[in-house]
Image (cartoon, rainbow, N blue to C red; front, side, top):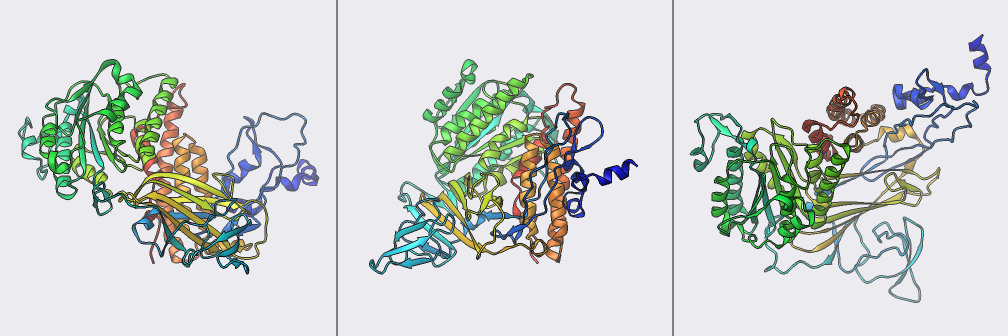
Length: 627
């Protein structure tokens, strides 16, 4: 009887879960129709309307854009308290911008200034339609593809692009006597080594027979088959300094060691290091100023590497870990040379001065996180890349310290002491293609980017290397029927290693479709997978593990529906491999939080923090299959 009465209600159809809904969301579709009340689920009378408009993005075949119908008013006079439920929606419309394109020449170099739309900032491109003014030989009318404004423009010969990928030089290169180049390296930038010399760096490990340590370091080994963490790190820096002096003789190396105090050796031009201690280590502004105003650095590696190697080889372990103060001094020194790199290597938590993470209260932990975020923003602003290497065996609070690498496109990793040599060389040898890079995406006014709620969006990248892939998710602002292809544009501004300021403009058109099945059959799975993993990792970084997992599941089902050919199937498998890695550690992190009594915001261990940061910047190449 109850079922009969229920089925006769006018509201009953709104409680159904359609096959399309279940295909899209799986078991989580039930949550979309339920309120979490602490007892049994109860219908909320909100439901999903299947997608009705699809748009074809740059680098990715067309896919669906979903629209949601407002929920009817809840009929019950007594409303239970609602828990906010995350409604995962896959991101089929994704723009992919691989920054390795900056390694190659554009299709066309345009002389003069780019022609901008007066309203939205869109740039005249090969797809722009212009009408000549019959009364003015150089006058034209241009209706912007992105905001539909009618612009009156003046064009000189060669100013109208004829290719999709064009380049403008906004500022000329720096004079050769001021800027040295070695390939893509900014060869007069700085490399600052921030080395942990705390007491725990004296811990020893077994030395493999094939290990090749410098002779000066072997002399200090107490036994032939045992080597300390400090000796491994000394060997790594020793080797890198020798290679740098040979390959990049104009790079300016500097050394900073930190224990209970901070020892600023610079380029070893002074007999004794400059020492910071006590209250000085708690003064953010003072530490940065000391780095900027320090006089004992700036010599090229060809002149100072021998002295620096001697300094590195003579370091001894003692004291605590003033990591934060050492990084601030290094940032001050590197601020004079855009394109510089800092290598931070430690085996324990920062516990002295600015950035002390060895604290208990939630407020103190938030303060530490804010300090490292502030440092990272300062590094990004100055064009400095920070790499963070943690030695396996002790917790280093990478959740906080790793922010330095995360925000500056550096490397963060946990390595065995014996592997420090190759890790330091690999991290510090990655070429920088440019500094101060920003990427602005433009789309027609019917389109909205999800991170800006507008038809344009900008990401600030900072230092650029070839492994960085940007992705942008978008949808239709409302239902529309386009009367032709839609134009998308990437505006990439950066300073080249030779000092020239460059604007790359990439403009492409894509058709739109209302046929979801046809769109999903042509989906570029690797691009959707890239964006899904990046988005899930960012959620996980903020502790939103459940939302991150739901996001992965939702995109998994989208990719399953799009497996129409061998390439899509293989790229789906690559997505599953990476998603399982991310999902596995998120489950462990959730379990840790559940068992941390009274501490639902338990800190991530170093492995989890490292995995999240690495997943946030996962390259497109690990998903892409070339058939």
